[in-house]
Image (cartoon, rainbow, N blue to C red; front, side, top):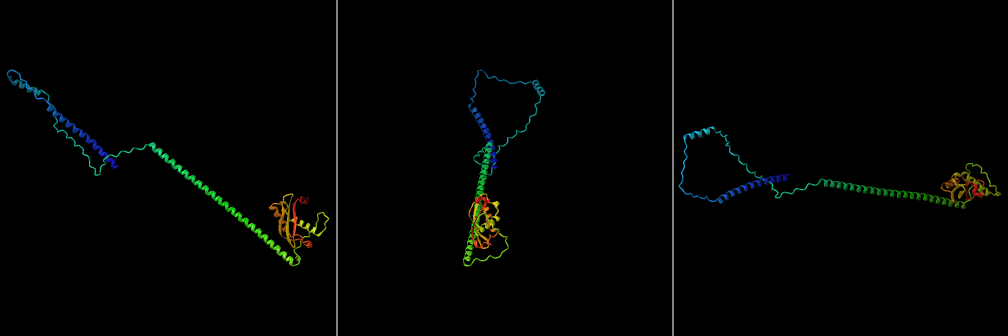
Amino acid sequence: MHADAIRQEVGSDDDLVMPVVMALGLHVALVLLLLLAGWWQPAPTVVSVAGPVVEASLAVTPSDVAAAEKAMEEAPKPEPVDTAPPPQPLPAPQPEVSPEEVQPVPQEQQPEPDTVDQEAVARLALEQEQAREREEQEARQRQEQIDLTEREKQAEAERKQRLREQLEAVRKEQEDAKRRTRMEEQRLQQLADRQPAPQPQPGPPQPPVQAGGNNGVDTDLRAKYVVAMNQTAKANWNRALAPENVACKVRFTQIPGGEVIDVSFVSCGFDAQARESVERALRRTPMPYSGFEPVFARQIDLTFCYPEEACQQ
């Protein structure tokens, strides 16, 4: 702001100096012209005329003087002339001396930016900012998707790991149960080999088992024993869970007294739920034992089928 004021002041001084210089130059030129005109004026030429010199004199009479005075009185009086001194010319303005050093060369005025260019630049900057924001948002979305995928993969891996651990625990329990069963069978077998078969302890009264038949001609005790076990197992079996016309052959192990301690499937077309119903039927109540001691067998094979006629064909 100060530099602009200095430039304006210097410019006004330059405007006053030029007219003063031109006026002085004009006066000097006029003076020189007058001097040259005086020098160039020729000397007066004296004309010589023949004859004597004639002398003349003016004779004024009193009547002429009175007429002249009367004419002067009748003549209009001139208006008074203002004798005030002419106005003195104003002194030429002198440039003020600035305490600061004046810039020797005026600074060029910077061109004002075009409004259209400014709008274009602002619009371009806005578009670039919006594009940058979109890129950042897309990058965040991609990163979030990657993180979500990684979390899903990790959760799936953890779920599979838990499932494997559960299956491993179930398999281990089954192996432990089988090992305990084999150990128990071995122990019982050793006891049976060392000692005579113990007499069964009297237990709670059981309903008499009717020795049924299958309309055959075999009246052997073993045949009746097999029929009694079939009737006991089939009575405890839930046939609603078994598929029709499908046979399931099982082998169960029992101890004296008729208690079933192990069930294995030899060849069975049942699903897991139907197999569970068969094992539950064999373990639900003791197998027939009283009256069949001479033909007692530790392992018995039975076939489950619904309807029963499909297995007999």
